[in-house]
Length: 309
View 1 (cartoon, one colour):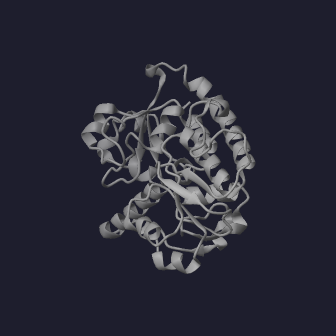
View 2 (cartoon, helix red, strand yellow):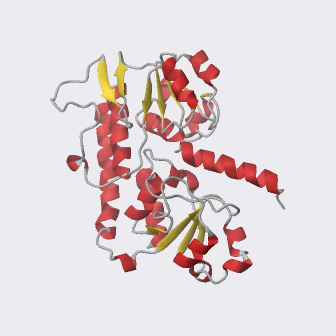
View 3 (cartoon, helix red, strand yellow):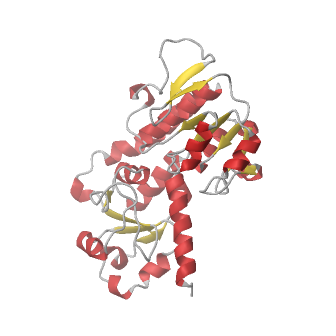
């Protein structure tokens, strides 16, 4: 049996993965322009000034030759665009694709600034930085681009933004269009569902403190697009702690566990009356696929959709 202190440490690591991991709507033709894209038909040229996904203006002096990724979702995007040979540093959690595991490690969800500086990259990609690490790197003169994406649509925009910055724009557009087609196949079905036909979902990140995902998060958007209702959406944004009282009040149809803990949930004596347990709909999901807003977004959406419907 796990010691409580050790279990809490594991939970903090899991939360860290989700927070740093870290999109959707219409087809590519209907999407807003990529941040920084003028839409004038001119060839991409350096230097260029773009706006990252947090609206910060960033100047890209020349085509980046060396890249550091501070987030798994950014790493996956870079490799999907064929930029793996230019990636010189990634986090301990950047283990997809397999080739990423051979890159220099610059920390886990706590970034080693000294290690990043020693690599001296041309550009650094991050995702919703929430500590002083990124600010420190910016202050030291490094080019940092934030790919913060809270919807499937924003993920597609972020992929095209990376393509623009790295001179792989055509490939990025093609990837975004392919993902849009897959996403729209599911949206065509779920957009016609009445609320009473949408199953209630509780995303379970740990069994002790009952952390979950609230509104204004990528996973919440994923659940809604897949035709489900996140019971924690009305509680607040970010990563709230849900009370047992709220769980019993909402009585979710599904409990989706972000790492293997189905057996622990099914064994809770005081939860046996919950609909999800009675219907045997407590499921261990692939936490990586559903939490990383990168080129596997359609795969993550399909994963949730097939579970709910």
